[in-house]
Every structure is written in C-alpha cells, then in structure tokens.
Amino acid sequence: QVQLVESGGGLVQAGGSLRLSCAASASIFSINAMGWYRQAPGKQRELVAAFTSGSNTNYADSVKGRFTISKHNAKNTVYLQMNSLKPEDTAVYYCNARKYGSNGVLYDYWGQGTQVTVSS
Image 1: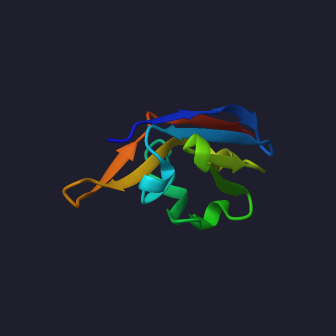
Image 2: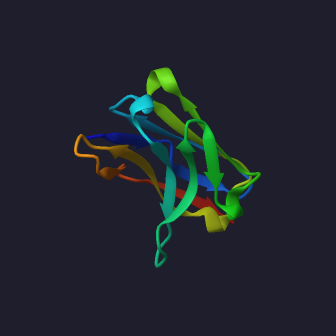
Image 3: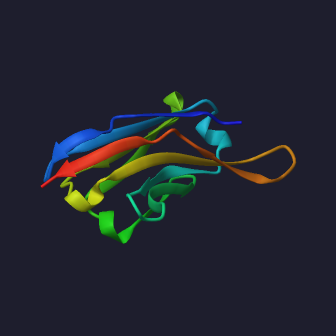
C-alpha cells in the first residue's frame, strides 16, 4: 500500500500562487505514475498534472503554462506549483499514485484531498 499526505491548499486571490505537496510512504521509484487530480463541486474528478513514467509529464490543457509538476526523489514527494490562479481552478485537489501490487494488478492510491479556493 501507498499512503499519500497532501498539504499546501488554501484561499488565494485570482492571479496568485500556491504550491501543493504530496508525500508518499513508498519510494517514488517503486511508483509507476504519480500526480494531481481535482474535483470541483458538481463536476467529475479530472487530471491536472502527472508524471506518467520516469520524468515524463502530462498536463490538462487548462493548466498548461500556469502549473508545474515536480518531484523530489529523496523525499518521495511530488509538488504542484500553481501560478496565475483563476477562480475556475477552485476545487479539491487530490494526489494520486499508481503502483503494481505483488499480484501484478495496478492499484490507485489517493490522498485525502486539499481545498484550493481562488477568489475573483
């Protein structure tokens, strides 16, 4: 199993910045993919940014050029730097990790979520 602990959410004005952190209980090298999703009220959870394999990244079109995902391997931590925030970025942000179990099944693990609110 992988436990994920998130931090860094909060309230910010439009145009501001926040940085989210997600610390994993397992080595990042043992995790196949790791990243951030978000869910706004009444909407489905959506991918924001993720490391898909190694250092390859994938971003939602709506955040390209504004958000940056990074990682610190020694700390088993993934970050999401969010700049030029917009009210439509308001959501609960979830850290996600995908890891194969010993049975060969790919499992999804989720953090508890952290609220990001952007005021206009």
